[in-house]
Image (cartoon, rainbow, N blue to C red):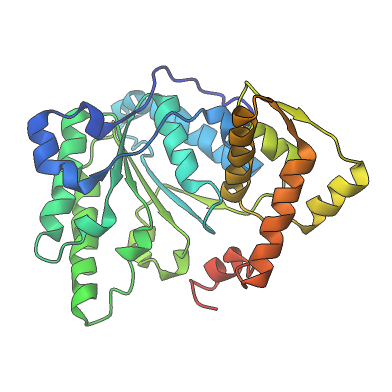
Length: 299
């Protein structure tokens, strides 16, 4: 991603890594370990999302000044779109870029029927204690949907959603709440309205080589050993997600390290892309995740 307009100092960390022993024993089961060592420069965003992110970062940077005039700064973000389009990747990169602690919530353990309200309360309490946290709820649709259903599971979700509402109203502006979903149409409208800004993540419309260079580590070179015709043939066929591109690039970097040859051939990467495309078509998984996403998860 091109440079953002507002710089932050520091390096993000996984909150659980710096918590006291007592807090790890009390809250550790609700928080997932996560790698936040991701450069914001590796993130690929649409122009619209980059403009939104700049606006959000500006408000966060000047949040105390805004509050002096009784103006509420943004600190609730919703990322939505098909799987593999970079929602979690951006959240981790933001933690690193902003020098904030990443509190990656374990949704499955948080939804324990008997303790769900206490679990949600504890998550926000530990964030408030350590400050400067990104509270991250991945797949938030597993909590905030189908509120009208009468089954027990939906009752648990309803208690979780109501608890989140209560905690958001009390959350410090030093903390940021980020939720992700690939089924936005299943979200409770009341939950969706709580967010200050929404980011739609779509499948890549970038040049494949641009994406490869984003994921290629500095120690490696790309040998562009293919004709423009062959390159464009793969470019036109590819419907892969950013995550799938990342996996392919990392696989080729591993091979390069093992073979002591740090010049990676573009032809090898394009071949892997073609194989992945063919595999998805054979197994019927090339049905566009965005189509599923737009239909609310039902095709």
